[in-house]
Image (tube, rainbow, N blue to C red):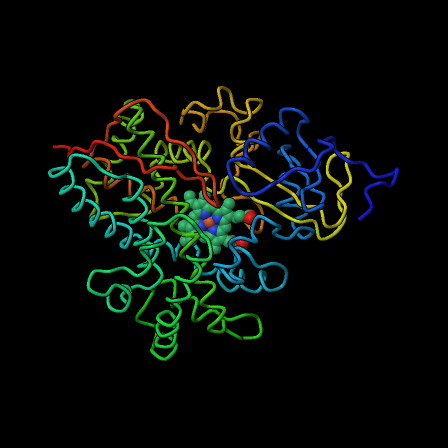
Length: 436
Ligand code: HEM
């Protein structure tokens, strides 16, 4: 790639090479670059590649929506490839397009509504545990609890009755290490591979039995076919299942972790949430998506939490073909860095950006499109589980908040662990009481 051509319109940026990873140091670097150089910053990465950091919402949208065909997933996804093989999140081009078309029907609203019972069941199991915790310890490790909740939920949503009969043996969940260990290194990859045989057996038994009786995500994945009538191979299914498990639980778990933390600190928010939640709990026997759709304040609280703590805080693309962004050239091969975390906290778009204020998302407030808000990404590669996760989180709050109150111990703010997901370095512990 030649960067020396006179005609090349390169955005401003530092002259020294910059190290970019997916870690806390990188966040500091990106924040400094934004403050010094503005909306579009260019730099050479340490490996010699040209990289742009984009903070102009119009250009972010252009990359993710209008010109998405010119960009593939980029360097930020290399690390998860070891874990997720060629599943939907990391694949590109025709492989991605085929898989997305095959999987998308499993995520229609109608299909997700069928999982409402599973969501309520997982909340009831937590309620039993939390009642014991409140009586015994009076304190809860909410990070661990939300993680176990979301993991159990995604596993039952995928495997249905096979979860209890084939996966959990003697009360032991073989996937539990995913919720206890946030690293996604080679050790975890090895552990995932150990689950391979079990998953392939489950896939084989699903292929051979009449799946009419199941309506879990696995049955839909097994039945999915492409335009030539060809289904997923076992290898493809394994990658897609691991993708679904990892993508489907960590993100919602982290969001719920932060929601409980913020609710514990804001009595006014808790009081307003309780009004909606009590209404849901009272009608639990008729838990319906229509009822959940009326939880507009809960929706605001979830959105504000996703603004401040977007689980996928940084992601990347790579230009497959030359492009133009604003007044600049983008040579083919350029790495693109996009950070919901940075844009969600940019004062130009959000007043007092570090303050937790769900009223920012009230319908009457500034029209959505003027503000950069993209915790689920945008465009054709937008998160497939967005609706699932909002329902899951609303059911969780609707059924658990009226029964339990959490308080804070002090005003110290948890430190961030900035890996593939934005987490807390240490688990959040909150005093827990059962409401009368
Ligand atoms: C708060 C919860 C969640 C957040 C913030 C979140 C965020 C994201 C983001 C940012 C991406 C796209 C990254 C990119 O454009 O490069 C993504 C993709 C994806 N997510 Fe989620 N996610 C959440 C929950 C879920 C759940 C519950 C599921 C499954 C049940 C799920 C399944 C997926 C899948 C399959 C993709 C890949 C889509 C594709 O590339 O076609 N996510 N998610």
